[in-house]
Image (cartoon, rainbow, N blue to C red):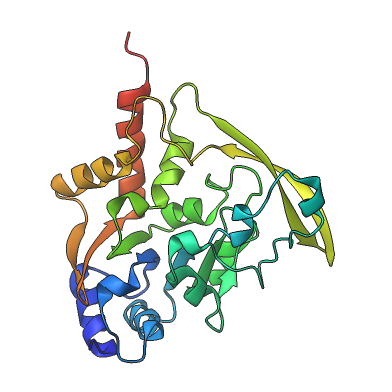
Length: 259
């Protein structure tokens, strides 16, 4: 049974520090039993980064799974409401636990929405671009600008959401563009809005679906970031600016046409 204090020690040993802004992904079952439940893990991260630090999680929303073209269903789809819409279940329980923690904030882009808790939560979640929501005007872009970090706790390396920001930034040809509609709650009314973004649901042509794993493994093998264990969960902590720059270079090397 892991205690909050032991988790604090594990997080500090991994390299998390006071004042850090960190985007975390957590497989709670991998951590093992926690005294006080998953809230104790959120609290332990808060203990390490302090009140000036900020913890973020990638929410998305469950509405993405139910938006259909059937006109008979369209009128019944609940609109995205940052204060109420549940995080997608595909990302596990951790983002929804963080989103519903008192004091947490959430950004307004439905599919790319992030929750944040801590000293800079308002800044991270404000003014999230509705189009191209993984680009510079997003919590991911701000994480890089803030010299933040990203942490995987018991989750596969291909779940590192920050690498979608690298996909956005990489100067490579033939990027697929996704256009879709989502309902949003605006001034108490449901408004259907057209969205446009680079398609992050499929790997670029010529790369395997799990190519994020190769990027992270190569980054770590070069002596960057750190591996450790949080509770019983194998974990990774990497600096956001460095992993994004590495991933951009990796993508451009493999996807730009050779002269």
